[in-house]
Structures are given as C-alpha cells and as structure tokens.
Length: 181
Ligand code: HEM
Ligand code: HEM
Image (cartoon, rainbow, N blue to C red; front, side, top):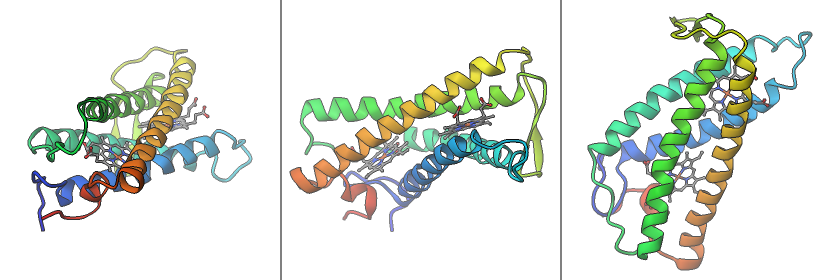
C-alpha cells in the first residue's frame, strides 16, 4: 500500500482526500442550497447553517493539508496525456485549489463580517478577523456564484475523467482509484 504518490498513481492519502472531499463538496452544495429555502419556522433554520459552517471550516483545514501534501509529493507520470491534456488538467487542478479556497474564505466572511465567531461543532470558536457590517449580502452573492462555478468545473472534470476511462481507455481514472504497481 502506497501512502505517497508514485510515478504510476496517486497514493492512499491523496485518494482518500480526493474522494472524501469531492463527496463532502457535493454534499455542502446540496446542504447550502436546501438551507437557503428554510424559513424561521423550520426546526433546521439554525442548525443547518451551523452544520454547513462547521463542515466548511473542517474542509478548509483539509484543503490546506492537501495543498501541502501535493507540494511534497510527485505528480504521477502523465506521459499518456497529450501536451494539451496535460496543460488543461494541470490548470484545472490548481484552479480547483484556488476556487475552493476562495469559496471557503468567502463563506467564512459571510458568517463573521458582522463580528460573530463560528462555533465548529460546538467544540471551539473561530473568531471574526474583520468586521464590515452590511457586506454579508455581497459576500453571500459571491459565495453562491463561486459554489455554482465549483460544481460546474467538477462536472467538466468528472466528464473528462470518464472520457479518459471509457473512450480513451487509459489509466487516468484508475490511478485515482487504486494502487498502481
Ligand atoms: C465546499 C465549500 C462550500 C460549498 C460548496 C458551499 C455552498 C453553498 C451554497 C450552494 C449555498 C447557498 C447559496 C444560496 O443559495 O444563496 C451556501 C450558503 C452559505 N454558506 Fe456555503 N459552501 C461552502 C463552504 C462554506 C464555508 C466554509 C462557510 C463558512 C465558514 C459557508 C457559509 C455559508 C453561509 C453562511 C451561507 C448562507 C449564505 C447567505 O446567507 O447568503 N459555506 N453555501
Ligand atoms: C468537487 C469535486 C471534485 C474536486 C474538487 C476534484 C479535484 C481534483 C483535484 C484538485 C485533482 C488533482 C489531484 C489532487 O490534487 O488531488 C483531481 C484529480 C482527479 N480527479 Fe477529481 N475532483 C472532484 C471530483 C471528481 C470526480 C467526480 C471524478 C470522477 C468521476 C474525479 C476524477 C479525478 C481523476 C481521475 C483525477 C486524476 C487526474 C490526473 O491524474 O490527471 N474527480 N481532482
């Protein structure tokens, strides 16, 4: 079992982070979308955003760890990709990190621009670092746009992965699914 990436494929750590976070991000989109439809008579009116914020901050910590892990691991060999595929996928992968970081930071600001802190699963508080009352609405709009963009990019990315697997029949999806020898 390889924990680290090898030249043939992604290691266990990168694979667990990739699939775990992908699932969580789709779940966060659904949760965010659903919680915005709740009215104050719903029993989830307060708990759903609390959960969304708590998971969001855990995902932010995981993203930072994943970024450092990526920097200290070699990328699997991509000689089976054309130069255009290589450039495109690498741009999209780094773009994902930047986009996710921005979605999460903007989400943090929606919740803290009024000076309140975020309680993470009731275990500890993450304080507000910048107060600018009235900006929450704008941050909310931006968060919404960036969340949609993330899901659109993920759909494009998943489509590309499935195309590699079923049409081009190469190793691109396999090296993110299991140990490659
Ligand atoms: C993977 C990351 C995330 C995704 C995909 C995501 C997705 C969403 C979506 C789809 C909405 C509904 C927007 C709407 O319909 O207007 C939403 C709202 C919201 N999200 Fe996130 N979110 C993420 C991370 C975060 C984080 C890290 C926080 C805070 C720490 C956060 C705080 C909020 C808040 C407070 C709202 C309510 C927006 C408002 O009041 O306008 N989100 N999110
Ligand atoms: C929100 C969802 C997703 C995000 C944010 C995401 C993000 C990423 C990132 C950043 C990488 C580069 C490797 C790394 O740094 O870990 C990657 C690689 C990969 N992803 Fe995703 N991914 C998502 C969903 C999916 C889905 C649904 C599939 C397949 C159906 C998929 C298939 C792959 C494959 C095959 C690779 C390896 C590509 C290569 O080696 O060139 N991903 N993904």
